[in-house]
Length: 198
Ligand SMILES: Nc1ncnc2c1ncn2[C@@H]1O[C@H](COP(=O)(O)OP(=O)(O)O)[C@@H](O)[C@H]1O
Ligand SMILES: [Mg+2]
View 1 (cartoon, rainbow, N blue to C red):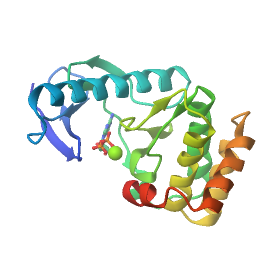
View 2: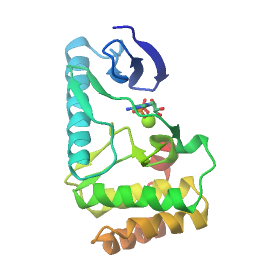
View 3: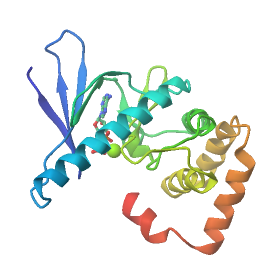
């Protein structure tokens, strides 16, 4: 394998590989020297499995998500998508609406993404592709879902968010989530948390 490092996050490194004749991405959770070894391994293994599980479930929901090819102890091998991240392009209401429809599929399947911002959505030829399920949760309630909306709301302009919600309304139970979003905003909670993740 000839791995090319293409991105480095707080938790993981993203490599591209072409040695199998298919464009691959390898997302690898690296060892953190400040954690004792046994604990570090179990954290990385647990998070890798959790992310892979959420990705599989997300794909089953019909959302546009990279297909998983293999899962190692600390790494996920997945299909490499072509496109630009939403945060790096000028996007309009059409893209926002499509992104909302993607989130509707995830939420209908009981998946909250956990970091649903333009930094984790790639615009591909077949529409927005949702990436980075590192913070995703399965089976959460409306609160977790509302935080997905809140993060997006804080990342885009008002009219864009309206289009996003139009797409999101494809989720049959969207109303209680919108209500929860209004509650959260009124309470002013999650400020610190969202500032960290946006
Ligand atoms: N399947 C993929 N296809 C193409 N590019 C990808 C893929 N997965 C990740 N990337 C690229 O790597 C970047 C970081 O991936 P991500 O999963 O968001 O990692 P992190 O958890 O470090 O934020 C993405 O913004 C995207 O540019
Ligand atoms: Mg990311």
